[in-house]
Length: 434
Image (cartoon, rainbow, N blue to C red; front, side, top):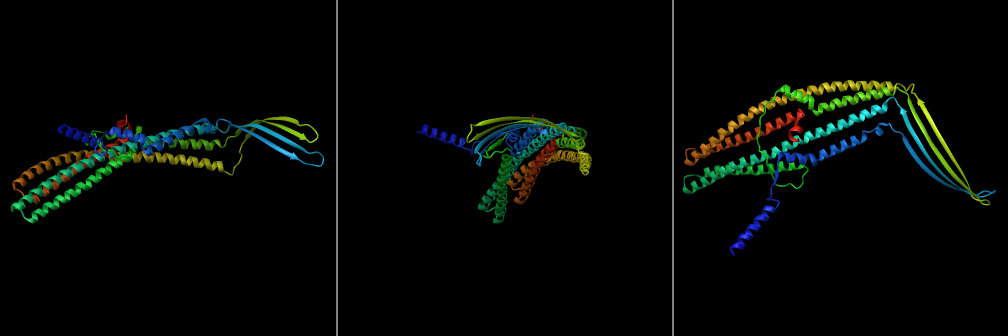
């Protein structure tokens, strides 16, 4: 009987462990990033846009190849007249070709433009990947942050509960009054409320991470990476060099500048003559069936080939204005390039300053937490021995709570700034997605 009960208990335990609410799925930061890069909705859309740009980039789209058309037609006529009735069947087939042989090098320019557009699409995909990686990193550490906060709130709530239970016992013994009990109860209920709200924040953080990874079943993750910050030493000059070489937004602006140059070249090509060729063959077979005679057939074929040279001598100044606008757009692009360089340099300097400050704030927060932990430990011993009252002990609890939360926020803020630096210098993909 006892063995049977043990077996049943083990079976129930295994079933509970297999239940989705109890089973946990290990998830590292690398796994989260890989899942997001595969499933994220925006990444999928951007990759399809890149596929479209790759499909468009060919000589056919640029206009190098001829257009060939094939057509077939059949007709049936019945003629009723005073002389002699007849019916007529007609079958016509034709093949035609139209080919622009020269159009001011516009075909070659259009092909170069399509190549630049494909490069731009690839850069946009890269920007989306960087954005997704950064979002996943922050979402992943946000889950860890909320979990660590929840543990701090749980610890403080446990201390408040112990304090409340102790004062209740003291009241029963007559050494505490109702006022003390109410103060302890209010503190415990406040800490419990904060803990319950933090549970919601933790669950919401998991949902945000699931959304970035395009996961809809909300598994009970066990995040395997540690919630810690590893300060690294950088120099601003080194970061600026990496930004100029790797920043994808800056690379996009260079590609846009190339596209503006191609627009100027296309506007100039409109001043060139155009040479085109049109050729084909048309064949017909006509059958006539008279009322008093037998059916007769007549076959014919027509071959043709024409070259056309055209040159627009005047179009009301349209070409001149189009060229002027294209040249102005190119100048504007150069100004925008200088602007984005200046903007990125300023942003990098600002982020670098934040990075340096938050690295120091992280040290301060850690030292502050050590002092608060020691103070809480000593105060608990004094409170248990009656050396301090509950109000002083509550103040120390709040000091510890604030110090613990500040230390967690300092870690997250440092990770946020470090991730922003990596993205601005264009190294975040190599760092987190080798």
